[in-house]
View 1 (cartoon, rainbow, N blue to C red):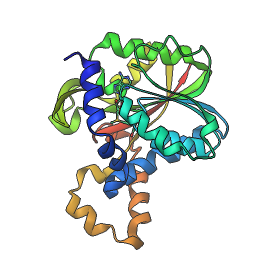
View 2 (view 1 turned 120 degrees about the vertical axis):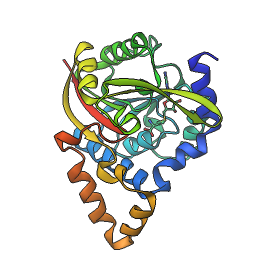
View 3 (view 1 turned 135 degrees about the vertical axis):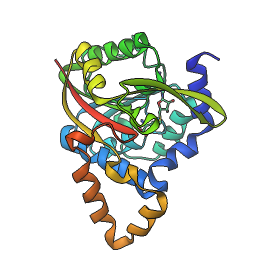
View 4 (view 1 turned 90 degrees about the vertical axis):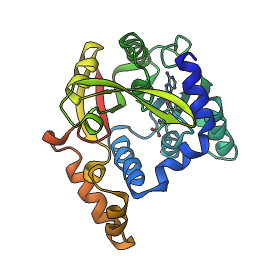
Length: 257
Ligand SMILES: C[S@@+](CC[C@H](N)C(=O)[O-])C[C@H]1O[C@@H](n2cnc3c(N)ncnc32)[C@H](O)[C@@H]1O
């Protein structure tokens, strides 16, 4: 099956799972929190933001609540439908610029210099060819205003191979589909970004050190009164230089040059 169909079929089958993912365990709640607080720090209220690979749109919804104008793009029609169903009665729905099925590599229909910021939190690690990743980044560069910000999630090879291997393709079974994943260390991610006209501002492991703990340990630590201490510890350890790329996922914030 061509990669676009595989991704669309897998995420169409997993809309509910994907929507619930960011609230179902303390680790995933931390992921959401550690990303959202960076979005809030860098994206001003009222900005135009394009979420490429939005899934069911939890981050887009958050940005709409901050008065941003948001466009959503995904290969999964059912994920986008779940978002529009949720937004049907929302007072923020006038600020949805578009909500459209499309591949991150094929965005000619999006205007030049439209966005203050782009979220690319999914597509880049599902695109396993250099050509497709570069096409996607060229689209982001064109759609962003000069100096615009790009928030990209990468997967790291470290937790799966336990060594400093620079990059690797892995496969995961999602909803019965064999979904490919490109993984690379932060140094490579920075080079990919630089080669496509983006300077790196910041990198954050989006699970902090909790990636190294079992669910049982985390559940023992997290009682309601300890939750914010736990999150503080993750936040403090999420940007330690020598640990960057040791967890499954990291967010890289870059600026268009
Ligand atoms: C793991 S989900 C992440 C959703 C959301 N961005 C988040 O961070 O929670 C990855 C999403 O990227 C989408 N995706 C993957 N490759 C894509 C591509 N080439 N073009 C558009 N969307 C893509 C998938 O359909 C899926 O909804």
